[in-house]
Length: 173
Figure 1: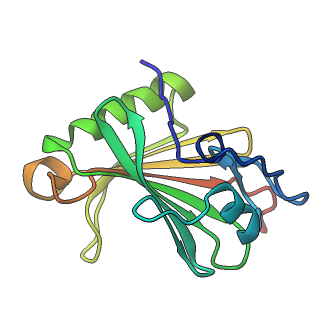
Figure 2: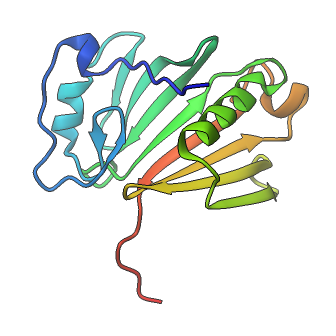
Figure 3: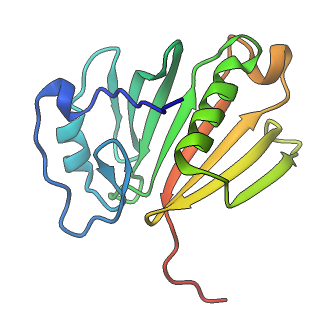
């Protein structure tokens, strides 16, 4: 099984935008850590029902095909003026079937995860199993929701989310 990200990015809109000179690794599609908001907006021009700009906070791309029958919403987060994370949130699916397909595809593409936690519990957040991969300077944190009606989210909520961030290169521990 191959993980295919079909996006509403530059290929669809016909834009060719160089990544910011100080940008870090590519997180998702053509979006790199450290890209400016202007560079993100050049890749994803505002388009009714497809791409929404939320000021300096984030750029949202709707209805991105992830795998056959599985779509997601992508949030490119740039609250500090530069891209710091990309969150891909799976659209609702019956019994969380897409979350299983996406997890399988990620494992096939990236191999054994670096970290796998059985369940993350919180009174304020939805429960979920966490899987983490680190590859080429990017940390990918996949959360498969386990609580909620109809298996982790059902039709009304996301049954999974995948967050891309640049891996920490310097740490003061």
